[in-house]
Length: 354
Ligand code: GLY
Image (cartoon, rainbow, N blue to C red; front, side, top):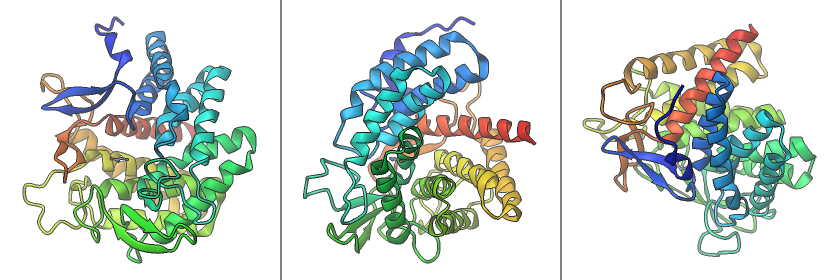
């Protein structure tokens, strides 16, 4: 195959604006999804062009391994360098991903038992805030532990997941996106939102990060409270879906009239449901998760997939990055594309294993 535009490896497509990709220079929080999509395409097709683009995208992300200002190191380095190591078995990827895991583990507050979302971990203006999104940064710590048996990775991952299950997950299985915590004890001070409708509502992508993050944490640790959190958050998500299986951007909008969907939340949740279909400790619970994931993926494929001739870029249409800020509303999102493809690959692998 011949591909016409190789310039894009120097920059990272993040979200579309009026249907055309907007790029980040350093990958922002999403550069890993672009690299990961290219690795997926290489694995699936064997076309070396995808491999070379994925490798170039990884190189362009490398310096982020020492970025001490964000929890997003897991989302950046798991689909890029950790995946690159699995596929290429080149130590460059392993050592870079382990450096990123060191930076992430160093954010951990062992007194409060949580990883703060943003800013330097020493910054008192920000270091008491956690967000549910962090659950999908923990996979870098699980991976690093599997590579090295380094206790600092396990301590940070396990400590954070227990705090997140306690502070972010409400009794009805919904999640608060953000929590203000007591730095010394980890006690919950207040639930908040950043991208959701309100402090007491349930931002649908946060709910999806929770489902997949708790499901993976449950597989890695077999801890009952985390498996319960995966069950509760997925039940809430499925119980509150509109008829087409793709959520609005928040589950507690006073009215959904004229409100946008977030297809990326559906794609992330489908991955989490497939994870539960594969690894839930109660095998009799697995088929329901499989069926729920399939329903969502069928709807995404029938109704949300970009088609030739649309004039728009991206794979999955109708994502919503940040409704309150008016950012990328009803657009394609690189993480929606990434998790949609990941869900399809998981589906193929699970069917092949049957
Ligand atoms: N983790 C940022 C977002 O989901 O928008």
